[in-house]
Length: 311
Image 1: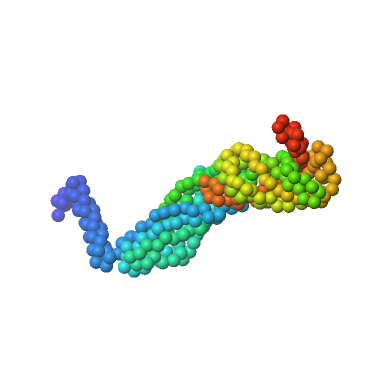
Image 2 (image 1 turned 90 degrees about the horizontal axis):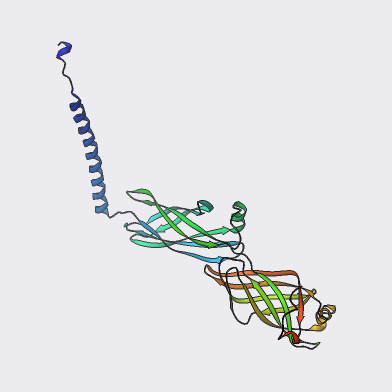
């Protein structure tokens, strides 16, 4: 046969041939997909689902915040499925705060559901040393990302991605000052007085003060322990004043007492804790004051101007 007698394939015939092959492959894919669905229906297998149902802060203080993420996982399958791994990441404005992996996290019962608790701890010193612009007393946004890796028959290993956003504080301890001591009853053996305290809240959130315990020293002599009798609210970045009654033995003070009686300031120090309620949960914060100076508030000053403030 001469070369001119060879059959020629037109462009359309080549195109039709490719379309036929492509259509065949798609039909095979659809067939396999249909078979998979038939198997799933026959034996009752399906993909598990998961959702973040809650985020709790059971403990928060100046050093750290413990966070617990509640994840509800539902297993529609007739057999238990293992929760192989849990990957988690907490970030703020795209910057990683903490991440981790929890291996072999348990098993989800057949046709059941389980709430898996993921504990995460934020160490504030690590955050502040890494990001200079995150200041104590501030509130920062966060995003929690969780990947649940499960092993499901027929499907194999699946990753269930989850996200949740919120806000968390970087607490800062309040500043405390003993401004005055007002004697209500005086004797050398035992005296009753009122401590006039100033508390300054340097956080971007309110503090609901409900308990206060600390010890006060005047000129290195312990007055004893003082307790708060009523609660008070300290506005964010605000100042509050509270009065606390106390009893002590003046004869133990020596020259410090005479300095107060003469109107001279005497050195004092305080150390203790306050229990506060916040929008993020309860906190127990330390309070301390070293090297402060206070005066005795005399009765004649009660109705006039307070010229006997701290020096």
